[in-house]
Structure formats: C-alpha cells, structure tokens
Image (spheres, rainbow, N blue to C red):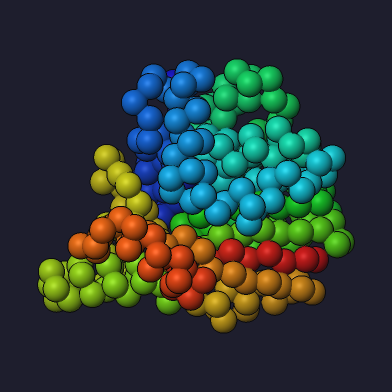
Length: 272
C-alpha cells in the first residue's frame, strides 16, 4: 500500500508524517502480510492483550452505540474499529495518507462503516458541534500546538459531549526511570542532548529516523489544557517494567501497584 505525500510546512508535522507513513502505529506487531485478516488480528491482540489489557474497559469502546464519534489521529483504525463494531457512527482523521488507506481497507475487509479524512489535528475540517464523542489516543503530544488541537476538539463537540484523550505523562516511571536516569544520566546522553532530544530519539519505534516531536505533561498541565471543559477527570495507566532485571511475575505485581501513580499514559476524560 502506498500514498502520495501531504505538503507540510511545519518541520515537526513533516517528521510526524514521515514517521507514521513509514511505520504506521502497530505495524511492527505482526509478521503477517499487511492488510490481511491475520495481520489485523495480531495488531489487536497485541494492543489489547499484551500491551494495554486495561484499554477496553477504560476507554469504553462499547459505551457509545449510536453516537457520532470522531477519532483524531486514527492511524490504521485499530481503536476506531472497536467503536464501530459496538455501534458508534465513526469518523477517523489522520495526518498520514498511508494510515488512512490502511484504515479504509480494514473497515472494508471487516464490513464496518466509517468515514475517513486526511487533516491536521490543529485544523479540523468540521462545523462546530458536529460530534457527541471525540477520541484521541497518543497523538496530540506529537503536534506542535497541542492546546490548539484541544481547542478544536472542544469546538467540534456538541454541548454535553465527551472528549477522551491520552497524553504522555511527565511524572511517570518510564520518563524519569528509563529516559532521564538510564539514558540521560547513566548512559551520558544529557551531556550532549536535551530531554526533548532524548524523547524524540527514544520514545517512538522508527525505521525512518524521523525523530518526531514528543511532549510530556503533568496532571496539572493536562488539566490546564482542558480548562474550557466543565468537567475533567484524569487517570494514569500503562506501566511495563520489562526493562528491570526481575522475574516477570514480580514485574507484573510491582506494575499493578505503581501504575495509577507512575504510568506512562494520562487518560483525560472531559465533558463540554
């Protein structure tokens, strides 16, 4: 599957386009040919069973039947397909044309209905109050003006509508333990790089050397981003300790204890 390039003036957006054109999110988790049923089954198994078994319950894919739902940064359509299977009326947007091509193919292959548009998260091409739910998982910390993207989510949400957004967590074990302490201090990378550069190089899987922009947020910073919403709930999830020299069972026990404090994902649920 191939796609032409979207012209992007902003270098960070161009890097993001390169990153997820070459390596669509989740593509490395299957050895089956891209676009086959077996490929998509592997991607889903890895995402919801191995990587983030908490995700189905926390995101509530089955809670929005009949609702008009937008995903900003849908990638290959993995999460969007879960909402669609449960009866949501879905629309997916993404910066990368290749991801949208794969997502359209996935929906057709599985008999799912959905609309797909290529656009910038900071400039959503929808009238105000178009959606009852807006979802974005692991996307808005890669765009230069995250606050503008969240303003756009607020604009396209109907009154009473729900936003669900995942941003990377600054006060996480992954950030301070692995990125800052291990790479920054023990391996000496902070002697010649900033933490922003370490984030670019170490966080996202890449065969393209694109080094996309990666930002992290505290709970307080996230709450300020969503200050226009009338109700905001923030939780923390996603902690894996496979980099520690401990038996797997010990890693799991320790992770379950620390996840809500020091996980890598901030889950923001906000009501307009």
